[in-house]
Image (cartoon, rainbow, N blue to C red):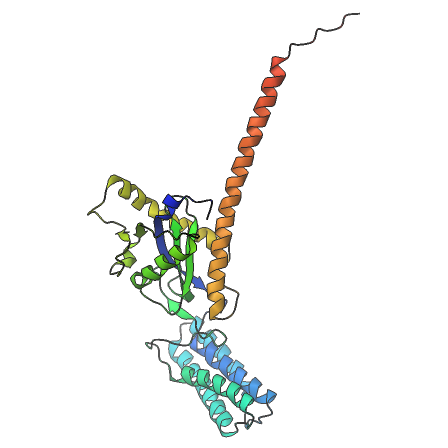
Length: 317
């Protein structure tokens, strides 16, 4: 934190974004067929002889459902999805009847059976749905983007200095919490990460999604606010939108655009690593500017010294 002044740490901009996971777009047909395949493979691995695996009929129903969905024939698509649901239910009941006696094998099968039962039971309007079998903690987040209405991953809260856009706080959030309820934890993290003597931000600039926050130890200014706004605060409030560009750089130049690491702990690690990469890019840009300035001074001094010497006369034979 030596590259940032202590006064800059007292004014931060805070915003949230989505860190998508490395999963395919979830559909009912795809998840139902994939769960059946995983159960069949586990059963074969543990020596559980199933009555029927639907190894041939399952992919056929999945292909038909995808084609009907592409052709907007929704009733026929729903019929194929019901068929896939029937196949998965039959495999689940068959595995439950032939559960092995080994505790380790039983635990693995029970974990996979729990996911399959959740897929069979969940409806369209349910909350806490299962969107991925290998990443069950993934949630569906809608940020109001026209080109990408829904993103599947986790929410990340970022805090940057208001002037330099130096990242001073980044942490992944479990589930899909309201932005205003995450502000206190983000400011606490900034306080912990700002050196030996923690600096508590005096002013925090946030978007309109943070209305209803419960932070009292820091002055919070929401975008579009008119009351208690001095010219300095108004200038810093306009500067808040620079965090959007910083998030875009982290997604395009870093790994925040898609998290390839597995697990809930990896969400936290990837968010912190992306913030570190963003700060390193800022430092490298500053060092390049410093090196160019020093080189320009050296070249200018050399030219001035060369011009001070008198010109040598030409030798005439």
